[in-house]
Every structure is written in structure tokens, then in C-alpha cells.
Length: 135
Image (tube, rainbow, N blue to C red; front, top):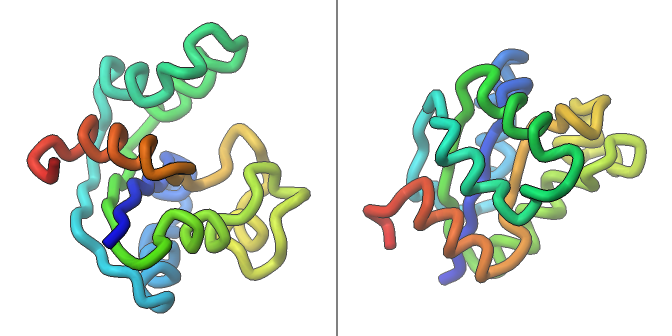
């Protein structure tokens, strides 16, 4: 069974979209393994986005994630990573199809509601970072 890490970002929490977002994954038949509402530490957020440390948008992304609580989740299912990425939609809202989370609710690349692991390897490292007890 494959696992993935998904984070509902501060804009999704502020806008009251947590229930709607979680429901979409549940209706798809994916199994929720873990869910927490957290005020992430700078250290954790910087580690999470560490691959982008040298990019000009790194400080902005870190600041945005630290701007409010996030909902962290772990999901399980067959091909859960690919399914999750389809449910989320393209990173750029203008490219996200209607019916996807970003296509229906996002209007900004910077504040695009949700993060999801993009590979089995990244899912494993993100789950280990946010949920070390699940490793």
C-alpha cells in the first residue's frame, strides 16, 4: 500500500476548506492514516522545503507556511500519490482543471491551498519529517 503526505496550507485553513478538501480524498476511497492541525516550526518548514533553499521564492514560501496553522495528513491507497496529485490539480490555478481542488478554490500560485508529495521517495521523507512515529 502506497502512502503520501498532504498539507492543507494556511490559506485553506483560513478559508474553512479543510473539511471539503479532506472529504474529496475520502470520497475517492483513500484511507486517512494521520491528521493534525499544527503551527509548524521554522525548522520543520525549512527542512520540508529544503530542496528549494537556494531559489528566490524560498523565504516567501517559508513565511507563508508559518503565517498560520496548517493541517498535515498522511493518506494510504493504491497509487495514492498519482491520485492525490490529480485531485489537487496543477500548481498554477490558471492551469488547474475545474473539479480539482486548485481549479475550484485557488487563485494564486503562492497560495494554492495544498501541498502533496510528488514521488514515493519524497512521500517517505515528508512523512518521516512530520510524522516520525509512522516510519
